[in-house]
Amino acid sequence: MLDPNDNAVNIKTSAPDKKSYHHGDLRDALIEAGMRLLESRPAQELALREVAREVGVSATAVYRHFPDKISLLRAIAARGFALMGELQSQAAQTATGPAAFAAIGGGYVRFALRHPAIFRLMFSAAPQQDPFSRPLEELSGPMRLLRVQIAALLPPGLPESARKTAAIRAWSLVHGLAVLALDGMIPADDALIDAVITSAIAAL
Image (cartoon, rainbow, N blue to C red; front, side, top):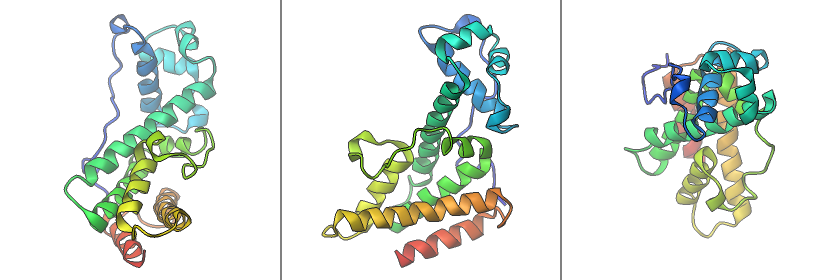
């Protein structure tokens, strides 16, 4: 089964003292508080007042940074993508080529299994957009890693449409694995996840 300490990106678990906030720190503290709360419940059960209590501030203070719940959820989703990218980068630090690509894919699935509510939120609250239509320099986190790795693995003369197809195929694989495991349709087993990802990369 998955080891929660293996290449983990931790979400802070202690709420900071409200007296320590300076120049926008409260916004980050509210995002972190929301992420901590989502470790034990789905996003639809999260309330702004509960996040305020978690941090130790008034509801009015929350509304200065997040006028409504959806704005906070979108900020949490963005932070989730950043943390996923960190985990993927850490996983690939000691590998190159196909092994690095497999490690990045495994990091995607493992993040989802460690932070299921945040993972589901990332794809429901984030603004809908085509990450393959944007210039690479505008991307960060998982999407940038995916496109960089695809470019490194495939022959340089391939048309951009072929690279996009390969990237979507790889993304679909790891996203599907994550959802199947989260829904209990397949076991959340490291060996199985790695075997499926490795075999798919070999076919790619």
